[in-house]
Image (cartoon, rainbow, N blue to C red; front, side):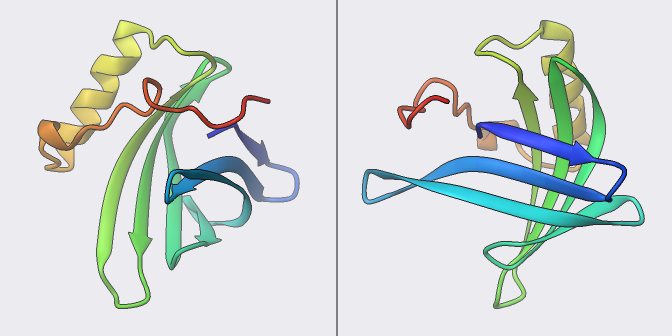
Length: 119
């Protein structure tokens, strides 16, 4: 993830990120529209992206993906402004993971293996 930009005036959210396919970094730009308490995004199925908490240094989010076959995948994400996470935000993240019944062994840290281009 390179940036997430919320535009409250227009009710949109914009993402810039990379995915890896066969070891190659592929740049992606995705946008979504605000619907009630979440943002709706069409990417690899239908997505609902909801802000749990955040400020200028971090975002804690809930993300629900429903793929083309109807399979639902729920994620909790913690995004930081740099490569370090404040321990209080990490604890809030772990609490959100537990509240949703997501096993802690499913937590993935992408900071340590992100070798795609920086901005």
